[in-house]
Structures are given as structure tokens and as C-alpha cells.
Image (cartoon, rainbow over all chains, first blue to last red; front, side, top):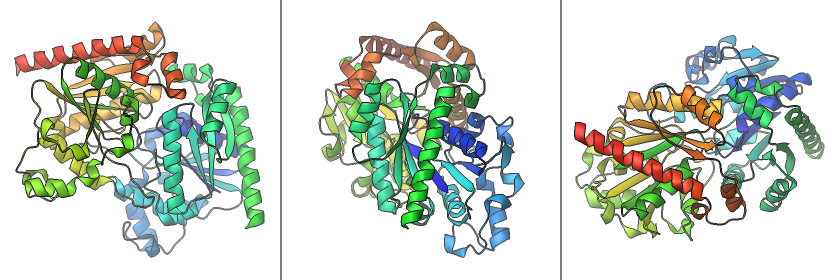
Length: 262
Length: 262
């Protein structure tokens, strides 16, 4: 299963990606988590001890050319070899607590401009990655999914839009949903985050009629304090872990039902 | 004065841009606010009644060519006419409560890919806009400032990085600071947002030693409730307005002192 996570900046995409990775790994899945947001830090959120040691995907172009005979940016149709999750080179991924992580890479110097070649590379990777039944790819995306090409969107099994109880995050959710539908990605679900009360839940449900909610993650001050004191986030909140397990089960059951109907 | 506002997604860039625009306008400045973040909504935050009526900057290219003889994307040096804040065409900006607003534009259809031409246009606009003593341009940026070219960075008088009490927002601040310095933008200041306690303030100050803090905006539940009930945000919190006025005065005094030393 390939899952992409998007939503407005700050709603908790990285947090959900990290917690979901943990829950899938603990359930016996091989997890490949990909940090595709240059402004987030999935490695640190998962708790990787040396996150800066991971070579970014943006430096993979030489490798892709070597293994496939294709120069990235010249179109995905040039790829001859389909990479497998298990077969990704160690250099471009690190493993920690059963989670293999790749990072898109950050722009290292100011003024260098366009980030699109890196996105093309990510697209090729997502599109051509072979994922088996016991494997899951979890993509922590930028706000917006505009860099997901049509082919990539078809390769993603599920897009999760994270929302929080704020009008702006709802607007972004509608925008992402529209972009996704345009791109041919129709398997979309929503997760509410930072939910403090029943009225927050009701606000989210009434603001997004017709959307499929996978779950509602509570706001937990323990997580905020763990962050500020630099303690491991994934161990900081049993409330959140419990809800993310529910989301995991909801994901599996929708995946099975769509397999059954396809 | 040209002020750019950046910071991690969700920290409150758009909120600060909106409140600062209000305070500058009420103090007699001509304010041009530019929404340069495709995933935010400055118009709605300021309270524009029909935000979707503003034609985006991305549609200005024909106009720029007509007025300057230059095709956007062929480099800023081709521009012959310097646009003035007062002289910007009504079609591409709306005015409300003394604030003129331009929007960068959103990507309308999924799968269209690269956003860089729009950024080039914005760069040209920022670089060549003539701003007089009683005028201010407030740019609500994307997280990260990678699309600010070297020339644009020199045209910006002040970069404000918004942070909240979270480790990720601090990391993003360091990243933005580095990118800005690389690009030649050295006049950088920080604003703390969503501050709930004295220990939040201390966390921010101790996490960013050597940074110049313009102020600390308190977390105010009244603002959150105004957002959820769709009431005007700028009228929702006297606490926030008071602190943004302090930030406004801090901005003016640093601008004057840098004029005096230059």
C-alpha cells in the first residue's frame, strides 16, 4: 500500500506519518517512510538518532541513471528497472525501529530557485516502486499535492488529508481534494488532528460533508511538552497511539474492501 | 519598507501579515499586502468580503510585458519601467480597510507541476516595486524562502521569521535564516507566536540565541473561536492587536536606526 499524507502546513502531517509508520512497523509491515516536505523533519519526529546522515533522494539521480539507463527528468517511461522497497540502496535510506526512511532533501543554499527536478525524481520513485502485500510506503507530503503528477497519483493507493479545527485547514483540504481529483487520485480520506472537544469533532465533520474520516487524533499537551523537552515524540502519548491504531485498522479495512470490489 | 514574513507552516505567518497590515494601515501607511503562499489565504484572514475576485499575479505576465517590453522569466534586468505601489492596476489588486492586496494565485488544476514561473514574476514585482516613505509592502511567504532570488532578497528590507513554541518551528527558523543569509538578506528578525506562558517565551529565546525578537504574540482562544465561528479575525483579540502594535513600533525603530547608520 502506498499512502500519501497532505494538508495545510502545521496540521500534523509529519506527526501522523511518524505515528502511522510506527503502528505499521509494529504490526509486522515493512515500512518505507518518505519525507517529501523540504520544510518538515520526519526523521527527527520518528526519532532517528542521526537524521542528517541520510543522503537525500535528490542525490540519487546518478544512481537512477546507473541502474535504469535513464536520466531523471526525461520522463518516467524511460525507467526500465522497477525498484523494490527491499532493494533500495542503504546509502539513501536509514532504518530505525523497523522503519526505513528516505528524505527528499532540502535546498542547501539560498537563491537556487526551482525545486521541480527533485519532485520529478520523487514522482519516478513513487510510481515505479513495487510494493508487496506486507509492505507500506508512507509519504509525508508538502502542503498541496501539485507536484504529484498524473502517473504518481495513480500509483498512490490512498491520500490522507490531515485537518485541524480551523477554517484555513478546511479550505486547504478542499483545495487538495480538488487537485487530487483532477490528477486522477480519487481514494481520499481525512484525519482530524488536535481535536480538543466533541464540538471540534462536530466542526470538522460538518465542514467536510461527504468526506470519509478515518479518525480524530486528540490534542495532547504531553506531546507538546515532549517536543519542547526534546523527548521521543512517539512514546509521549498513549491517547494518540490508540487513535492512530484505529486509523491503521480503518485504512486496512478500506484497502481490503477496495481490493474486493476491484 | 518591504517586509517578508516566513516560518514553518502553521506558525501564523498569515495571521501576522494580516494584523501587521491592519496596524500599518491604521497608522496612515499605504499598505500593499501580497499573498505569496499558494496554501494560505491572506485575503480571508484580513476579512476581504470577496477574496476570490482578485486576479492572481500569475495572470499579470501579459500586463508586465505590455508595460515593460519584457517577457517575464527572461530576467529582471529586462524591466524598464518601475511599477509604483499606487500605480498597480486595480484588476490585480483589491482594497479593503485601507489594505491593498495582491495574490500570487493558486494552482488551479492538479498535475500541472512547476510553480517556478509564478515565483519569477513575484520576484520581478518585489524587486522593481518603488516604495516610498509612507508605504509598506508586506509579503506573506511560503515556508522557506528558496524562491527569493538574490536580487529580490536585496530588495526586501526585513525578513520576519515567525516561530511557535515547538522544536520543528525552531529548526525551520534556522533553515530559513541560513537560506536568507546565503541569498544576501541579513536584516532578519523573529516573532514568537502562540505563546501561552513565560516558559514558552524563555524556550523561544533560549532556542534562538543571537536572534532579534520583535515581540511575542500570545495564544488567544478568542481568535480560535472567531475562526471556527467565521467571525472577523482581526477584531477578535485585543491582546494580539496590542502586541502587534509593539512589533510595528519595533519594526519602525530598527528601520530608522538602519537608515541612520547607512
